[in-house]
Amino acid sequence: MPAPTIYYIRHGETEWNALGRLQGTQDIPLNDLGRVQAVQAGNILSELAGRNGHELAKLPFVASPLGRARATMELVRRTLQLPPEDYALDPRLREIGYGKWEGFTLPEMEAADPVFYAQRLTEKWTLAPEGGETYADVEQRVRQWYDTLEADTVAVAHGGTARALMVALGFATPQRAVDLPIEQGAVYVFGPDGFEKFS
Image (cartoon, rainbow, N blue to C red; front, side, top):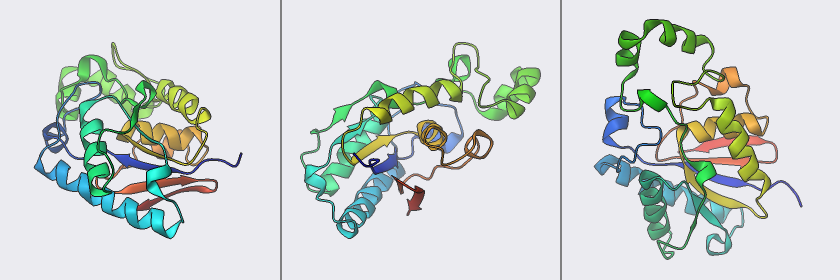
């Protein structure tokens, strides 16, 4: 089978996103802007799928189990006039775990532990906060997820899992991917030859 194409959407904005707080595994709901972004992503997806000859109703849809991803998925599907809850969940798509730093901003993290913060700036792909995960860990689980795909797929997940997928598929180096902004309200198309953002 040829490599599947993934239509990848990051969840819409939450209040913690707006405040710069690390969310990780915390279940923070979408804010008003986040709901608008989810509808925007649905409209972009509709246009892309039509251009690529995909009938969206026949594609599998899968989301991270975290509430912000599920809410985004359901708004996307409503925008596409598809049954909102007719999609799968996969825990391998959940956001990177930030351990004890979940809920903190980066300046708060730096103030609380400047030594760890400085080390993390140079080793972000392989250094985990206490109780958290490394990006290398996330890369392994999203690669396992990708290897199970049997068809082109729509996925709604997180910024961290998008970066890990880019590296897992050989589309970016860890050094490039680790600080790459992943836009909300956009659709990233991971195809056989790389990835492209549509917004």
